[in-house]
Image (cartoon, rainbow, N blue to C red):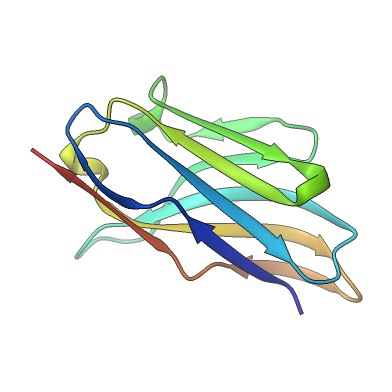
Length: 120
């Protein structure tokens, strides 16, 4: 069984920075894409950023230039460096792994989420 564990969320002031981490555990041979999503109160979950095994990245327009996604394939870990945070970045941030080659092939795995609160 493959699990994702996020860490690094918390409370930060406007303009501050946070770094989120998400580690995948279990019998993992490879992960195609890892990504960060977020869900604010009363809103739908949205993609923040994603990165392929070849390190091709994709960002939501709202975070371009402020957030940076990276991954360590050897550790099956993905990171999200968030700078110049704004109150509208407040949300629960979820990690997702797509195309996980484990004992079986797993289409998608979600983490449980970590709360990021940006105060004004």
